[in-house]
Each structure stands twice: as C-alpha cells, then as structure tokens.
Length: 355
Image (cartoon, rainbow, N blue to C red; front, side):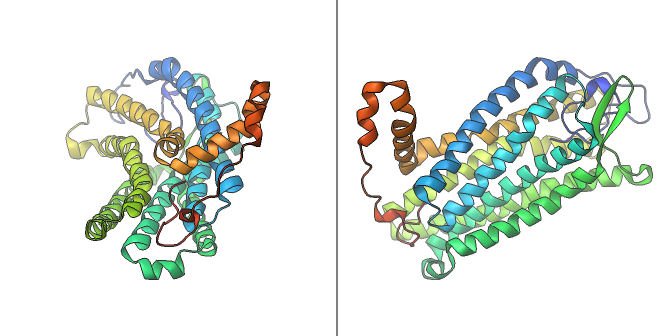
C-alpha cells in the first residue's frame, strides 16, 4: 500500500519509504524477488475473485434488496470501496514485476483510488457498526433516523472524507526515472520529507485502526449488554454479519498497520540496523499483500453468514446462469422465490441485516 524506494529494483507497489539507510551503504533487500514470484499471481487471483464477488454483492443489493434500509446503503458502498481497490490491482501487479509505464497522471489517480478505497472501506465498516448500535441499543431513536435518505447523505459525507484523506497520496506520488526504471513513488519536499512520511503513516494508522477500533469496542460492548438483557434471537442474527465483517477486517489489516508503524519509527523500537531494516521491509510487503486479499473476503462472508444473500444468489444463478449452462435446468427459471419476510423492512425488530 505505501511504497517508495531509492533503489529502483526494490520498488513494490506504492510505498513511501527508502529501503536503504540514509547514512550508510546500500542495504540489499529481497523484496523484489518476493514481488516477482508471488505478487503477480496473487493479485490476479484477488482481481478475479474480488471483482466477481463484489459485483454480485452490488447486483443483489440493487436488483433484489433494492436498497430498502440504511444498512443496505452502507453495504453497497463497502462493496464499491472494495471494487475501487480491485480496479487499481492490475496496474500495481504489472508495476511490481516491471516498471511504471502508465504516465504521471495515472500514477496520481491510481494512488488516490487505492487509498480512497482503503479509507472508504474502513469508514463504512465503522458506520455499519454504528448502525447496529443504534438499531439495537437505541431502538426507538433508530426508527426515526435509520432511513435510506440519511444513509445516502452520510455515504456522500463519508466519501468526501475518504477522498480528502487520500489526496496527499495522490498529490505527492509522481513518476520519476530512478536509475534503470520508471517508478511511481511519493516525492516530498526535501526539507520536510521525514515529517510528511511520518504524518501520512500516522494519519493512516489513526484513521484506519486506532479510532475505528475504539468505536467498535464501545459499540459492541453496548450491543452485547443489550442482547444479553433482551435475549432476542433475531437481534443476535442481525448483529452477526457486521461483527464478522469487522473482525475479518482487523485480522487482515491490523498486522500491516502494526508492522508499518514499527517500520516508520525503527529508532523507537531499536530496529534501525540493516538486517532489521530488510526484515521489516519484507514484513511490510507480506502483511500488505495479506491485507489486499481482504477486498475479496466480504462476499464470502455474506455467502456464509447472510441467509438471504444465499437465497438471492441462488435465484440469480438459476435465472441468468443455469438456463444457459443446462437446458433442462430451464425449468428452474420459472421457479419463483417466495415473498421476502418482514425482516427485509428497515424497522428495529429485524434491522434488515440478513442480506
């Protein structure tokens, strides 16, 4: 996710760091070897599964769910955030193995898209958690405020904040000829380079991990306390999907943020020698690669946790896929899905999270 190297052959993806000590001889790294062997096939798999999975989520939310609640609106935008991530992957995959051949404008645009997708995904997970909190802990108040219109308005605001947070990455990233290859890296004013790097990384960690974690811990403590008191089975099911999405997000992204923090401030952790620098550099790339896989995980969560999502997916498959694969299966085309239960309405009793 973040990348810049003074040594061209070591550059992977979009980093902001120098992979060699500023006051020492060049410190050789094996990150380029890792990139050439693993990144291209891994990004290709993420691209295929992430694109298909999130496109299906968008299709089902619009065609079958019809965005009937605030929750649906946030889930739609979460899928769009993942699709933004995925859109930039083919370019970063090519760049990891070759050099940057797409021009300065695309360097800035794709860097901005990458981070807008990151911030957008995190912010929408926060608001999905707050949506669950209001629906379960403040049920009467939630009936008035949890509307589709408010969901759309807050989504516009969330995207405005996410784009604003990603602007510095887009502004400072530019194409430069470094030795034998063209790179797309962050270039800061020389007299403020260290400060800008540290500021952007700290902003990403605070906005992407620290604040969301605090909000989610508070919300789920209150949610669990309320559920234990009311013992409503439907409410338990309503909170399960968002809880799983949140946990999976932190499993994939927390290691990267933690390693990134250590890599940005090695002196604070007494890890500022060449050997530790190489290990941290590789750890950044490995944890970032793991984090990127997250963009194709949410559709899998929906399929395993969301009962309605599985039903709608089955309808779509039978009506639009099976009839072309298997002629006798065309009988299934006429099969109608029963009426959606009242749990599809945006009321507190059901919270519309079954997807």
